[in-house]
Image (tube, rainbow, N blue to C red; front, side, top):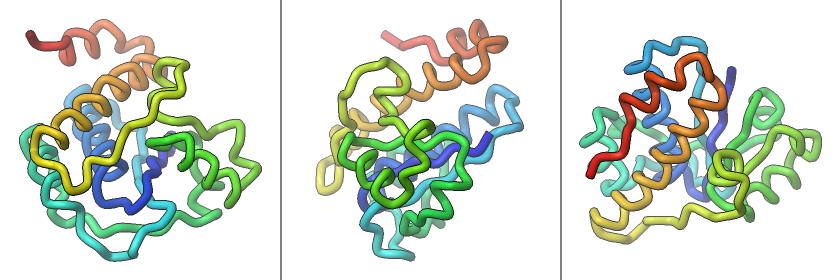
Length: 163
C-alpha cells in the first residue's frame, strides 16, 4: 500500500507522520507499506524543521536528510491512501486531483471519523512538537490496526499508551 501524508510546507507534520509510520512498520515487521509526504505549499528542498527532526529522533526516526516536496497531481494519483493534516489540506488535494476523493482523508478523520485537524507546530517549542507527534502517533496506531487487523494485538501491545 502506498500512503501519502500531506501538510502545508512538508517540513513538520507530514514528514513526522511519514517517518514515524516507517519506524512503526519496521518495528512491527510490516514490509508492504510505501510511505511518502508532500506539502500543498512546499518550498521544494527545504529541510525538516529542527523541532520536527529533534522529536522524531527521540522516537528512533531520522529527518535530518529530509527535503520538502511539493504535492503534484501525479503523486496524489499514485497513492492508495492520502492522509492530510487538516481539512484545508484535504480540500487542496481534491482541487489538484478531484479523482482522489475516495482515498483522501484527514489523518484524524480516517482514524476516528471526526474532523479534527492536527495543528502546525512550526515555531513552537519542543513541547508543542511533542504534542503534535503524540497526536500523529495515536492516529497512526489506529491506522495500522485498520490496515492490519491481523496484527492488532501486537500493535496495541507495542504502542500501549504510557502513564
